[in-house]
Image (cartoon, rainbow, N blue to C red; front, top):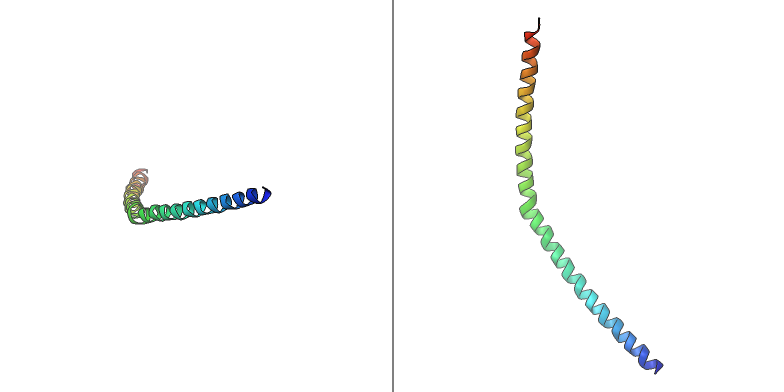
Length: 76
């Protein structure tokens, strides 16, 4: 009886090990798909919008600098 219990526990352990191994493989595949999506779709969009944002900020800072220079020239 003790042998049967040990045998059943070992078999259960192997089944759990196989199930976890399969789950790990599937999780890794899904994670790789997420990484690929981020690399191909999200990162390029963020870079494009970031550079556009920097250009807009640079333009506004340039206008602010012009305004400050103009104010300084107006003061006696």
